[in-house]
Amino acid sequence: MKKALTIAAALVVTASGAMADIQAPPGSTYTSTRKLGRAISNILYGIVEIPEQIVRKNEAYGRKAGWSYGAVDGGRRAFKRLGYGFYELVTFHCPTYKGTFKPPYERCGEDHRIEMNPHDGLSEFPPILGAEQYYHTRSQQW
Image (cartoon, rainbow, N blue to C red; front, side, top):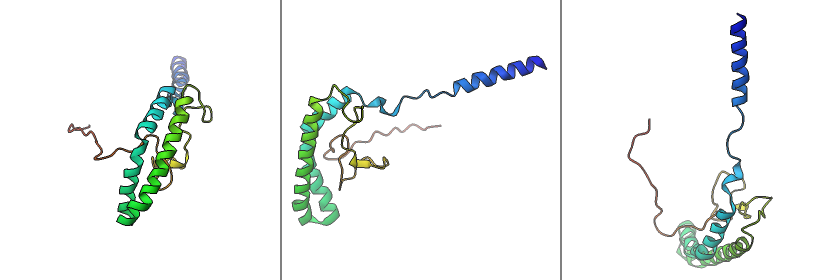
């Protein structure tokens, strides 16, 4: 009986030590190289916001709003991306946003449930023109 209690106590101590937090912290994916990549993509592809917003406003409000309001809003977003791109290009080596390398434009998903709010904020990377690619496998998952 004493041997069984000793083994049970050893298992409890071992199991409780195994429940430590072994995951990576949430900010570990945001590194200086990702910040540099985000800066370069915002500088090179930020102009894509103009046709993207024209299409989005066209679908939401109609053709006239798409070519007027969409073009103006796309231009505003493109200049915003260009500014963030140059800012992050200059400061890519130091953590500038709350001691991390996260993007400074927080309004895109303040509740952290959505990636991009096309009416209000910016996603981390510029949008993709054309058909988006999704990789699906035909294998069955068990």
